[in-house]
Image 1 (cartoon, helix red, strand yellow):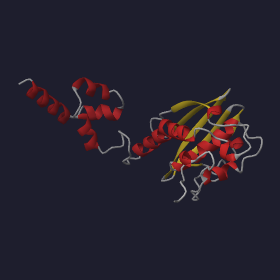
Image 2 (cartoon, one colour):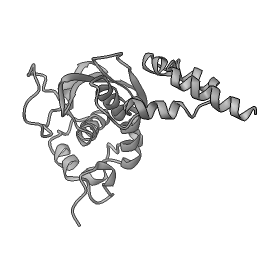
Image 3 (cartoon, helix red, strand yellow):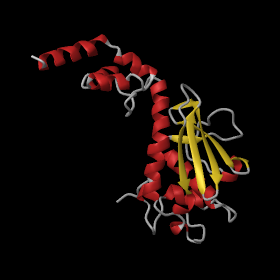
Image 4 (cartoon, helix red, strand yellow):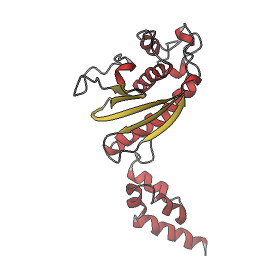
Length: 225
């Protein structure tokens, strides 16, 4: 059986090779928050995001995961700022801003194009990092949980925003083909359709599609007769 490349499949005795190789380059002064930052970089790479080197103005053609010390992203005492790009859209820069507050990291992730939706979560670092372990394989805990949470709450949402802004189909409601979105909206009742129209400018326009209301009237009229 081939080794899984996903962090979430790591075990108490075996880390995925990408994460393990990254950890081996961290020095003994690395804090528990910085171990979390290193983990996030590996999770980003699993979703097609790559760190933009601070010394380069444009995205490198080498799309492999390149090691960078978390300390290089520290812009202030408690703030880390990391620029990233999506593999197939290297001209769209995203930013992760991580603010440490006690044992917590407050994460904000957003794309610098479009409506700039900012997605945020707060993470208790010591729930996932054991700073007293001398063994790399036991340095992290609850990797499946944090992997899913980080990707679902931050990474995949920004990824969907980028692809939608670029006009590319993606597995989000906004990223579906227009005809399919109209099909879904056509299944709603009038109050629900009005609520959807307030979600975004795009859905406001779709919700005003005459075909939707014509179908809704025919359906309600048929039910009343």
